[in-house]
Each structure stands twice: as C-alpha cells, then as structure tokens.
Image (tube, rainbow, N blue to C red; front, side, top):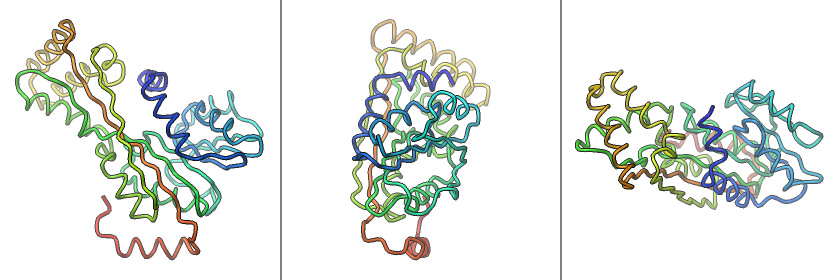
Amino acid sequence: MQGLTVIRNHPFFQSVKEESFHLLLINAGYTILDIGCGIGQDARNLVHLCSPEGNVIGSDISFSVLSKARNDYAGHNISFCQMNGQYQAIKDNSCDAIREDRVLQHVINPKQIIREMFRILKPGGRCVLFEPDWGAFLVDGYGSSRITRDILDFWSDKFACGHIGRKLRRMCLSVGFTDLVVIPKTYIFTDLAEAESIFTLSENAKLVAISGIVTAGDAEEYIRFLCNRDKEGKFFCSFTGYLVSGKKPENIKNYRILQHFLIFNEVNIY
C-alpha cells in the first residue's frame, strides 16, 4: 500500500495520468468508467472534466479502498462499485470513455477485461490503458549479469501478466479497437532510495535468495553493489510503461456477432 501511495504522488506517474485524461478526449456529459480506481482520486478528477451533466463510475476489486472512495468522493455524479474483472452490471454501449491504469498486469486473462471494455463503450467511444512491461525493467547490476537477470525476472514473475505492456496493442486490435496509438513512457531513476520506495529492490533480492534462485551471498553482494553505486552517484534504474489509446468503431452494429467472429478467428490469446 505504501508503494501505491508513492506511485500515486510521484511526478512521473502523475504526468502519465494527466496524459491519459487528455487522450480520452472527454466532453461535458460523458459517462466514464475508471477501472482500478483505488481510493477514488482519479475518478474525482475525471468528474471535473465531464461535469456538469456527466458521471464517473469507479471500479476496483478491493472493498477497503472502495469504502474510502465512497466516503471521500461519492456524490450524485460519481459512484463506486466492486468488480473483479467481470462487468456484467454495466450495459453494452453505455460509456463514452474508459480508463485503466496498471490493473491488467495483475490479471491472468487481461484480454477478457479489454474485451469487456470494448463491449461497454459506445460506438465512437475511447479507451486509454497504461501498463508496464517488466521485461523492460532495467537495473545496472553488479558483476554477474545472470544474477541481476534472475533477480529482475523474479520481480516480473510476481505479476500475473508481467509482460502485458508489449501485448496491449495486439490485444486491443484483436477485440476490435481501431486508431490505436502506443506511447512509451520511460523514467530513469538515479537515486537508489527513490527506486527502493517503488520497486523494493533490496527486499526483492532477499526474496530471490530465500527462494533458492540465487545464493544469500549473491543477494547481499547485489544489494551492496547498488548501495556503493548510489554513493558514487552512478546508480541507474529504468522503468518503461506503455500508454495505449484506441477507439471503438462508430459503425459497429452488432457487438456480439463481431466478438464471436474475432474469437473464432483468433490464433493467439496472448
């Protein structure tokens, strides 16, 4: 939870959020679905963009964060509901815009959620997604590149879909979205404490040692190396995520028929 708070307040991730709002092309009167809304701050900001006639639906899997969101922000044009990737409560063609931020990395079948986003959007509606690709997460580690790679792979594998970033465009195209735009967003960390506050590099190295993938000595040497590099002003860590926007075609007449066709002709789910 602390890491999520740091991310929410970090200038890089805040700038990505602002750009995602811009890509939605929101107008007054829009109905917007915010997937993975957390404590509701983004939903509140979206309400300001679609007011006075518009409304925002915030969804999240966590009951506790939704309780806080309801207490802090619920009103006549903003509501919150608990959803775990199934959105049957939201009708076909009912939203003008949908936003998703770092949710799909935690989902075993992210394409199902993207398919639901397509179903819920009105013809001509827009979606914007932001996801990392942990295969592109880099740390300038020490000595053995294998040990550094093992530690970073362990981090990536903690996520249900750690390589979702590279798959977003294909998944969006395969469910029917058009006008896809992919914007890579990279942030360079040159301060170890800043990177630790989000990625818990040292803790992750220790967990890799506990799992037996590397030795405890290797993990300690890895952590010591990062600390020394930081003291020398040479620490380097790179995070990359992908901001993807798409549009539901305006001439869609029958969503169900289209989806059956796409699923039937699909070769690769992932």
